[in-house]
Image (cartoon, rainbow, N blue to C red; front, side):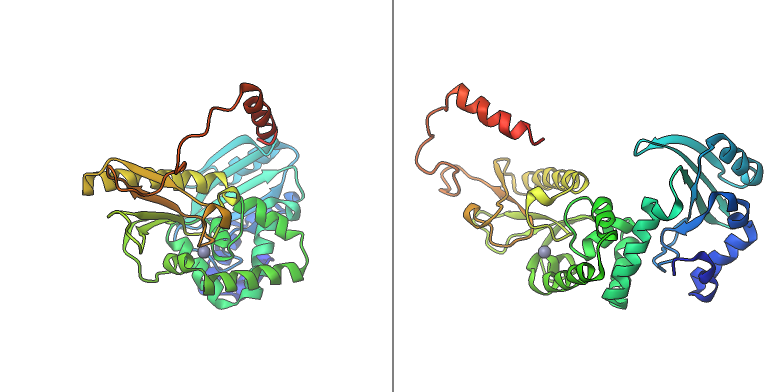
Length: 325
Ligand SMILES: [Zn+2]
């Protein structure tokens, strides 16, 4: 339900959200700013602590701040701040009413064109195609600590930055969203690492909302661990910055734990992309392979190092890659 007034016919949480909006009179007070309700309540994906996200079209920042301060400045936790987001002047205001956090977000953008509203709209379309199991699983992911858009990206195995990818999908026709839903079903059924992320048997050594580490089935040396993103991403080049950073942190933490637990500080970290590179399971995974002197495993150059390349060749290659950064 993308119209806030429909919440009065919804679940208990949606009806409670509707009551808060009515008691505050906020959709009337902010009427000149064309408010829409975005976020999780319209999708029935709210978890404890979810806020009511009200998006406004604001061209006069100072006047908008005055309205908010005059009307809601006395409420608990009231805070209003100006910032620049995506190059646009932005107002963000927070307060609580009867224990429910409220966030008002204003930018000089028609509210139905705002990222928050478009995210919600495409999420509603995906849920309508994917069914109630999808909503239940996304609610579970959110309860486990994921924000809404990363939770959708994880459930639907979306590549890249979750916020950007969902905005791209928001402009796509139904057939493309159907393809996304079908592909996600196929991946969940076929990918052994997705199944471990969903709770299949594995010898876990670490888990957080985004990443997982478990013992490789084949222990060429004891303590060979795989670190994966819980989201199905095929190759390292499909990872967004946030997930990459989280994976890097898990790799370093697990490396330390292996060192302490097994008394082995020598370790390879390697990660294969594509069949010629030796990738067997097409879900990004980092191998953490403890090494012992003379164990005869894994060498990048099995025979001997090739000679150093000339500086001119190195610089030319570096130029080509740097141009794509
Ligand atoms: Zn997978």
